[in-house]
Image 1 (tube, helix red, strand yellow):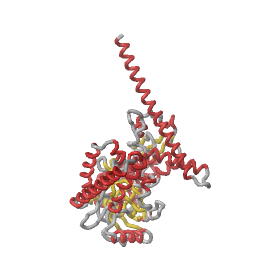
Image 2 (cartoon, helix red, strand yellow):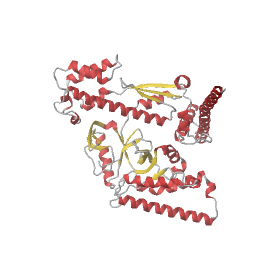
Image 3 (cartoon, rainbow, N blue to C red):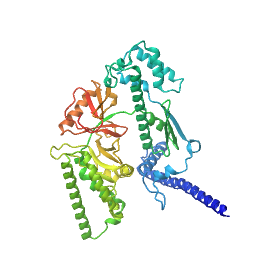
Image 4 (tube, rainbow, N blue to C red):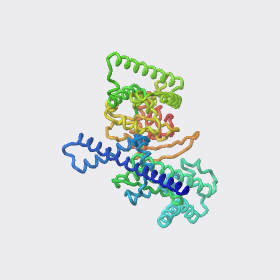
Length: 499
């Protein structure tokens, strides 16, 4: 009897666990249905008479995906309060066989990487080895570097491999008189870094697609990257986004001081739109609340300015402000949170040196888990009424702990077209200086250099306004421009610093 009781206990426990996981699918489906209903209503409200049904369906799908992506941290599970992201992560994984979707295999061109490191060396043995390794790869599952090593040892006739790279900008990676094995070891590490960076870029692109339960695996031997995306509808669009070459873009920017005064107004307007009942009171109470808000904002601005001045405009000084903000958040009441929907998740920054006026384009900081909610609020019509029409707000590529910075770039085209991009770069070389990655760029003399001269000339004259270096809508660097660059040759540190 005792054993039967234990058996029933585990049966009931298993049944409850099964019901819980099935309930996750039910809750997520209901939330996704609501997202589609929202998208249908939204598209209907802005639909033009000449739009075809295909265009409408495409717009509904895009709005639905955007809504779900921006609602990743919304709490949708009753009682337990699980977020949409948690529900999708933990629900039963049906996989490609049951749910449908797509699988893509991607491969990094290591041959192009080696050519780039050698600055397209014309050494016959080197190019013959590259060609033979590429041919062998078609019939082999081995890594390209293993095949190149085999081909090189067969092709070269006593010519040392280090000489292939001796005249390139990467020559410091290949010491004079290094053995072929030592050079191949360096090349192998560079290839591994390239594959790892590509894998990270693919994962970030998938996050932007809003696909639930994606599977990204790097094959250990060949280095190919296999991507499985359950539930994907528009396969061609996804395939195009995954395979698109990451392209550098150079953007003019807004300074933090130009936006600092807007955040409180945006926050208050969003709060009044979401919770109008909290702002209905008699005139005296309203006046008192207004005075309190102004006093708080004034104190906050003064404190931020003093902190910035004391720190010499070092953006890392925001870490202390972030800790203080975190402590303050613990004491907030539910009403405080409703009255500050934006500012409880986004910390405005004033990254300006008061003595020189030199400013940064880092405008705010947020916890990584709050970025989707911040995106949703800042993309809404309320925030857009306050923000400049040509502004684009982009997150930094690298999180610092749990925090990530928000940058403000200026889209003067109004169409998302950067004034300058990687297509005008003739050559690029990588170096390491004081632990930071340094990239030397040479731009096309007829197309790139004149535009770059104009951009840097304008930025330098505007008290060293920053220029943002963007890839895949993420800001990798935003250096201040000290002086015009007339010849198209630049050195960029992938970390904040001068050009």
